[in-house]
Length: 564
Image 1 (tube, helix red, strand yellow):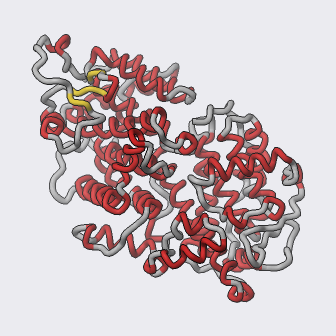
Image 2: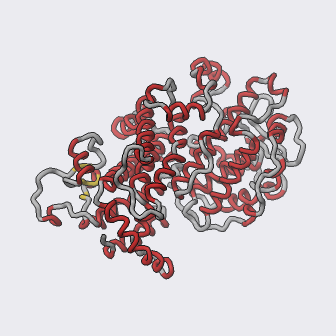
Image 3: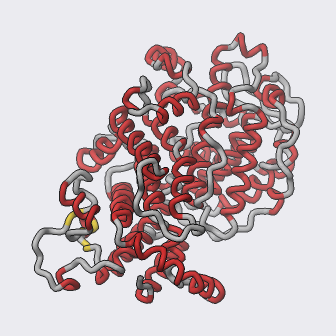
C-alpha cells in the first residue's frame, strides 16, 4: 500500500461551481469525433486510435509529454494502475497525442502509487483544473477520463484531512456530468465520419462504456467506506457490459481473432436488464448469463444500494433496538440471499475464491486486481448487514476533548442497543466475515499475489480497520480460553481462516457461541485476555496507514472501560 502522504488542502476552487447545468450530448460528440479542435482545450479522437490532442495552456502547460520523467510515470501508470482501472485503450495510446489533463491525471496516480511526493504538486494542479470552465461548457472524453482518475486518486487519500468531502464532491460532479451527457444510457451521438471507421467507433463506444462502469465502481467504494448511500444505481446503466479484458488489451491483429471468441450476447443485453433478471429470479442459476470476473465484480457493485438500505434499516440509531432476529421477508434476509446467490455465481462462472487462494500454494491462480476486491466487498456486505459498525465505534469513549465527551454522552444508549446484539448469532457471523476479509489481506501481503494490485485496492485498509473494530470489541467481551473460563480444553480451537463455512463445529459456534475460535495461523484465541494481541496482529497489517493505526489503538485503549 503506498504510504499516506502529508495531508494537503486541495484548492477550494473545486467547490466554486454549481454543477454542469448546460451540458448536452452534442458536446461530447464534437470532442470525440471532430477533426479540428474548436477551442484551445478541445480533444478529439483520431480516425484509428483513442488519442487526443490538446494545446494545454495555463496550469497544464507545466506537463511536458516529451520529458523522460513524464514518460516514465505514464509507463508506471500502465503497469500498476491501469490493470485496476482499464478505462484507456493501451494498444493505441500515444503520449504525444494525449490531452495534458489526461496525462497529468495518469502521472498523479502513478506518482502516488510509487510513494513519490510529486503527486502532491500534480494534485494541486489537476484538482483545480479538472472542474474548471471546460467541464462546464464542452467536456471531452479525455477530460471525463481524467476526472474519473482524479476521483480514483482522491479515493486513495480518503482518510486524510478533508479528503472525504473533496472525494464525494468530485464523484458527484463526475456522475452528474455523465448523466447530463447520456453516457449511462448510451444516448451520446457520434460523428457521421466515424461510421466509416469501425475501429474508431468501437474504441469511442467501448471507452465510454468503461468510463460509466468505472464511475459505478468508485461510487460503490465510496459508499462502502463512508457508509453513504450510493449516488448511482444499476438501473441507470442501460449499456452492455464492457468487452473482455483480452480483447481490450489486444493489438489490431490479435483483436480480430479474439472478436470471434467474444460471447455474442455481451453486446445484446443491457447491464440494467441483466441485473433485474438475476435479482428477480427465484434462482440465479435459472438466468442464461455467464459472466467473466469483471462482469461478476460489476454485478457485486450493483448490489450496494440494496445492501446499504437493508443495513441502515436494521441498524438505524432511530430504532430502540438493533435487529438480531430476522423474520421471513425481512430486508436483511432478502439481501443476504441475493449477495450469497451472486457469490455462488462468481464461483460457478469464475472459480473466484478457489483460484485466488490456490495462487498462494501453487503459484497458479487468479491474481487479477478484481479477485481480492470482489472477495472483500462480498464479506463487507455481510458485515455491514449483521454488525452495527457505527454503533460499535460510538460505544467506546476514545478521543480527546469534545469528541470524547460526545462519545461518553452516547455510551449509555449504545450499550443498551449492543447488549442483545453481542450475544446473538449476528455478532459471531460478523466476526467470521471479518476473518475472511483478514485472510484475504494476509494473502495479499504474504502470498504470491500481485502486490501492485494490493496498493490499488481502495477497500484494503478500510475493510481491515472495520474488521479489527468488530473483532476486538467482541473479543473484549468474550471469555473462551481455559484460563478465563477455568474449564479444561476439550476440543482444539476452530480456525476462523481455514475452517469450511459449512463445517458443523463452525456452524455450532455461529449459532450458539459454543466452542473456542482462533485467528488463523496466528492461533490467537478470540478471548478478552487476547484483545491486545489481536490488536497487534491488525496493527502489523495496517502499517503505513497511520490514521487507521491511530484509530484502532485509541479504540482498543478505551475497551477496558466498556462493558455491557
